[in-house]
Length: 162
Image 1 (tube, rainbow, N blue to C red):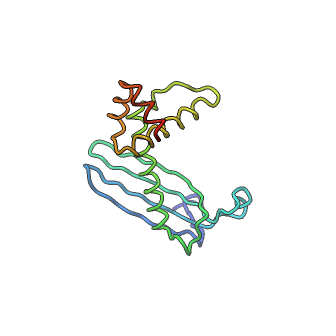
Image 2: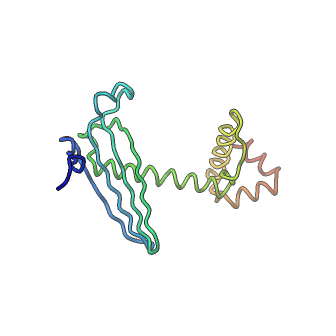
Image 3: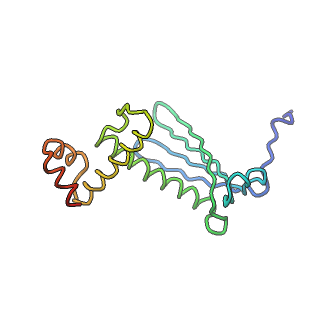
């Protein structure tokens, strides 16, 4: 007989959505649970209307992984249902991952050991500016960085003519 702790009652305003993708040798399941922000929390985040719990499961041939993240949003239910929020979260991470991956591969950002004061933020801004200059010229980031590293005059010229 299940005990009282085994009974979970969802809040009446809880809405769920799920999507499953299969490809690249894996099955990815993304689930979201969304509800209005509880009154005890809304004072901490003015403008926030809902809280979300997003769970991602990846099933590979030899292992499974699970990640749970929590989010708050100012988008009301009338503007974005649970399915839309799940898509927005996925699109956000697609952009974040592609940007971070490019910066790490092109500039070795993860290998940088600068940690003091404002230096890490300053270096991140310099990398962003360099990436923008490279992209404006229609070049690929890694080869362009390598070419500019080998030709300092071309790099300085690129900055001055931007």
